[in-house]
Length: 224
Image 1 (tube, helix red, strand yellow):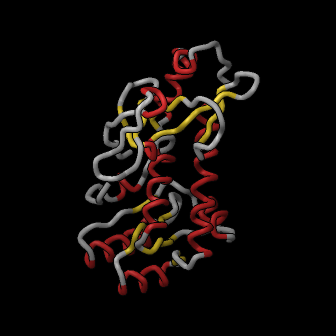
Image 2: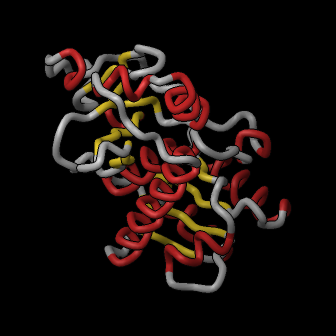
Image 3: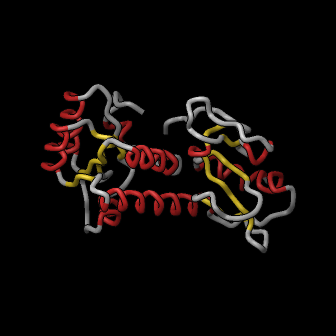
């Protein structure tokens, strides 16, 4: 997983510090105390009965506690009492919290991919993706984790031959990509370069903290 830049937390410190390059507000991880862009973290809120609740959209009311968006950090927070310290009171941490966060982040990413398709920003299919690559630099390549090596290699090396930097998302299964795009299965896809691709890339990086990124093993030379 790509390591986010270390920045700080407005809600914990009471300041609205921002990342110098304009990535938005930064937050402090309740476990590591690292200062990170909000987009690289997950917010947690308390339900009325004081149950720690993932707030992946960052919209639930009340005080929030932030953790770096990866399984190890969330598991550590649950195991070592970091949420009680962050909320400054006794709280209930539900079993399988990291799994719940992964599921919610996946749902959010799939919804964003679906919106990108409706906006005409997604190309699907092996031949269609290769044709789109010939015309314009992609924002993000999508390759199913369970897709064939031969097909994804042909897509990737064509992109590398045409452009100096290529980013790929490979942690979603063909069935998960199918859900995003209203199909049974999707193996190859492409998000056109633009604001939606950047939003989807950030959402993917948050999810990738909770599951393996096979593309980093497939193509170690790609941009991360």
